[in-house]
Image: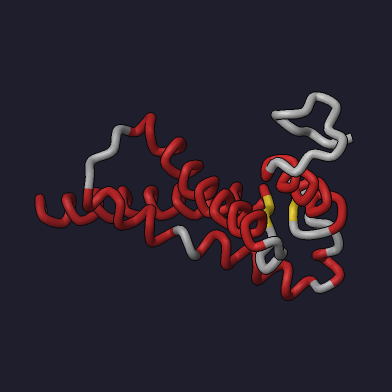
Amino acid sequence: MRYCPSHSHGAGCRHPLCLRWEQLTHLYRYHGLNLIPFYFGGCWELPNACRQGIIANILMTIPFGVLYPLLRLLPAQHVPLLALAVGFSTESAQLLTMLLLGSNYRTVDINDTILNTLGVMLGLCSAQVSARSFQQDLQE
């Protein structure tokens, strides 16, 4: 049975949302979509590639965490939300691309969101530590 906003029974639906829902279900079942945190599937069959993917997802968002405070002051309670938004927006863009193009050129993985969030947090923390160290040097 298909989900369709215009047909409660779902039979014969040609609404774009119906087609996208079927595609999303197919991607989840067969490839390209992982919504289970800390599940890496068969990734560890190729441990170097898996490790590189994890490290890359962290490293690619560290610059955002370092540079964002230079553009705008951010209250401490908003930092985790900003970090999560960066990872979530990246994966959401990949999901939309997959659904619109009908291909699985990129994977959509909740682990990537978690690792991107970690990268932003590391960048923000390193920027704060560097700023404090710089201020202490100036005072001496």
